[in-house]
Length: 453
Ligand SMILES: *Cc1c(COP(=O)(O)O)cnc(C)c1O
Image (cartoon, rainbow, N blue to C red; front, side, top):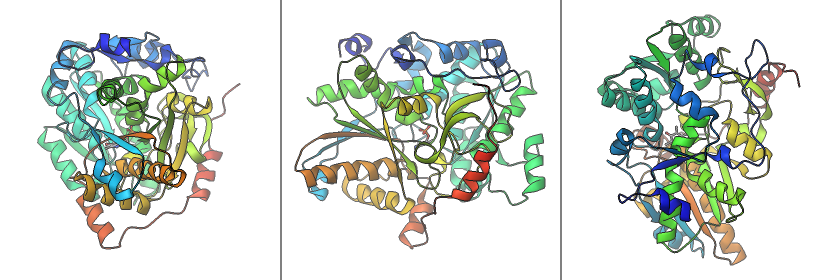
């Protein structure tokens, strides 16, 4: 805890991000070049990312200082609040102490600006003019569009088709920030055109949108690519959540027994949990850590731990992760931010090493939990965050069964004010659970790249 105090300044915001790579007992497997099968070097990534972020990606420094320009923007909404969910506890009649860290207080409404701001900053510092990216539900697109507006960068967003149609208000927000939005798959890229030729009605996926955004960045020297999750540096930027939570739990005079976060690519989960897992790895405090994903897109619970592409068009390097296969297109669940075929390599590594657990939640159970949370705590959560709430409620009910009181801390990754159509559909009984898409996943897994051992 002392390191954290040392890192906090008088505005009670951490001065540095925490890098879990410094404390891993065994390093995560390297990222490989798909052509050579050899680990990628900084030069391989230079066409896509600024050198500052490439160095953060491979750094083993325990803490990396947050630039003052970034801290001055963070200060608008950070530290984000940590609440005790007393009315939810009462409704559940549980002896558990339920806490949540609320990231919906950022201007874009989620945790994503925590990394969008530094990513835009480092690109600006290195003279980049434009960023291209993908977005699922539109949370990442709106966060990066905002950060680009702050630093005077242009921003191009490929938005997954199903969300583009389901969530026009998020698209409106991205455009209000001044970015350009294109539905993906689009006819603007080779990848998009190839997919549309085969599947003219494709609902799109994050894997496809990533390919389109990478293609644009790789072919334009003034444009860099920006990813909203999965990569080590993104997870590290998000650790400001957990570093603040460490301090706030101490203020509350408590320490979590269980940590819960929803996982799409793994960034908000890692942001909350890594500083606590770091303490566990250093032997300073034990904690159970639960990652929660949708049954419709279950990479951690049903995926294979293997080298795979991060995108559907196979333009990215190969990363070792829990994957459903890069060509898998998940069902159109409303938690668009959780529709990714893979998982952050660091999260996959921690699961493999037994430091975390993973469970999958059905769409209807997630919404039931979200509505109960809304009625007790007053905050209407993003559909992604509902998965974490469902798992936290399960943990609290287990405490009740066992007659034990444990402290549960979950991350409320964002509000759902742009997801009202999903809530309307849920209330009207129009939402459904999706079967685990076994056949599609088996097909996609059959196409995994072969990598020499
Ligand atoms: C994007 C998003 C997620 C999923 O992404 P992670 O990288 O796994 O955090 C979860 N919740 C919200 C609110 C999001 O916007």
